[in-house]
Length: 152
Image (cartoon, rainbow, N blue to C red; front, side):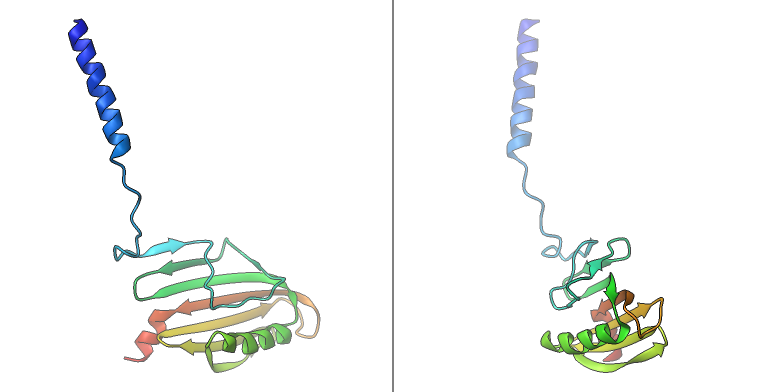
């Protein structure tokens, strides 16, 4: 009986040791060709005003080997025209080329940009008049698939 208990104990110790030594770090999903979904990640080439905060409940991004897709929603105070001017100037610094912009309605300004194999739409929305300092919601949609589809 003692020999059986001793053998079982040795087998358990060996199994625990082998399991602990045999673990490999998780592989990078992009290196394996898999897509990854991220909720907190912002793209480095998409600027946002310094006093604006990312709304994590409505923001997300997906990254694959040959594409990226993101919806980023920022909230802060300012004027509709001031934020539109910010994006018109700042996106150029990141090599985004403007393709269209203008008021969609009294409280919404839309700016469209392209980059090699990517499209970006910046939608700036206000609940109040465009003349006053107000809460502004900025929605940024980046999609490399949009640009690829339009070039086909």
